[in-house]
Picture 1 (tube, rainbow, N blue to C red):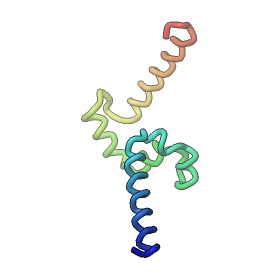
Picture 2 (tube, rainbow, N blue to C red; picture 1 turned 90 degrees about the vertical axis):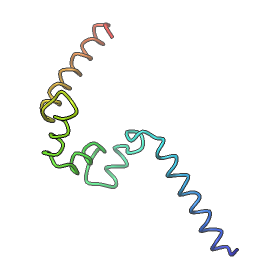
Picture 3 (spheres, one colour; picture 1 turned 180 degrees about the horizontal axis):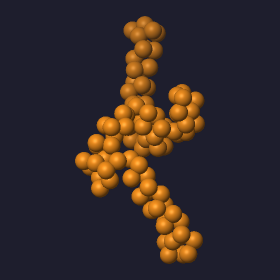
Length: 94
């Protein structure tokens, strides 16, 4: 084999291993805000995904798979949940 063939084979092995490892890393750890903002016009991976999904499709999915009729209602409930969780942690109720 030539050096070029060896290099190509090595590169393919490295790429394969990177793909395997990256599948084991949760998206929030893999697609950090720094990575996403450097490579896309978005600040977070979530922003990127939401931009890629039409609102009516997302709302339909949420209505069929959650107890919320749409993203707005889900966000409202998540906000209340987050505020209550912070209040519990401040009060020591964890």
